[in-house]
Length: 292
Image (cartoon, rainbow, N blue to C red):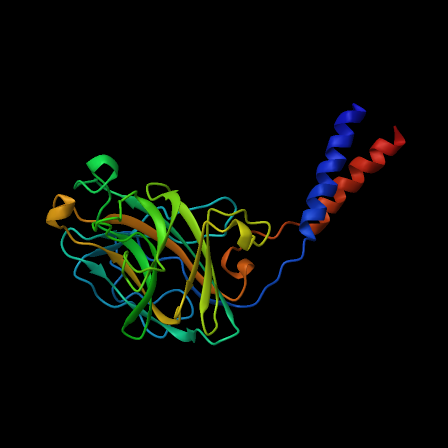
């Protein structure tokens, strides 16, 4: 075999082995919802996943299970996905967690997948163009108070051009001074990861579609949020109903792979590679090269 090919094989083997031993810090996966329910069934009353106190509640809008679910790179996924449609009425469906997050000095990691689908309408986009005006998001509540949401909000106020990008909406208000937007399009299948450092003042970092091999750098966050209270103990998928400002078009979209944990690798799991297979590949190629 050509020595350059052998060298390449050896390099791949040893590089793969080296990446295997990059330190990974695991804490605990606190909650997971992969929507592993029957295709076409309604979300209301479903009780799968882990880390919850009770089944999903009810909603006026459409919240049904769609196949296939969403995927991202080598992220471990399961089940189907959640399709939400606010056409018959606003989707606002709650599920209580079996824990609360927000103690000072702790860190919470959250991940989810999201895409906005359906038609655009209204005149609030750039240059008065149509946009996905009504929102699809995943909101986080502390009791009855909405603390923040991941996804989009209704940006129909002066100075809030609806650019159809993913963001973190504080207190359910796009006009909140701590609300932040990224430049990532809502029309794509996005994998969003958030880290919250809880304290007297909470600081959160949002990354869109980060690499999965390493914990992302806060210096490279797509949005950084500093605000007073990001505590939560329940979650709520949301899709807005039709409005005159949206051209009477409701929000539609998919939400999937919701995880809450203590570290990045809890909420962005990837398959474990075979240590011995990688080691064998590298050593075999290296020894063969040496014999040449």
